[in-house]
Length: 90
Image (cartoon, rainbow, N blue to C red; front, side):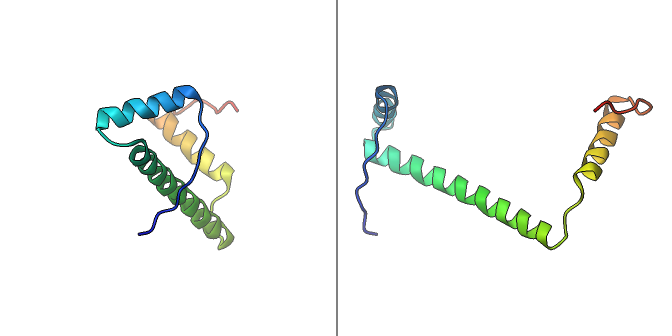
């Protein structure tokens, strides 16, 4: 695959950390930055996709009201910690 050069600016401490990591891995700065960038893009893409799927689900009416979810969570917490008779304090 063809590559394209990009330029970034970073503070001295970040560059030093990058250089230290590259040295410890016996790799180039470029390799370390490329690996980090790919990992970041993969993570962000996954999160964006999950958010979009969630929004589409809500548009289809598959969601539940916030109050219902919170009431269910409070009930589970009360059961878990043994305070089943106490009222919620919001």
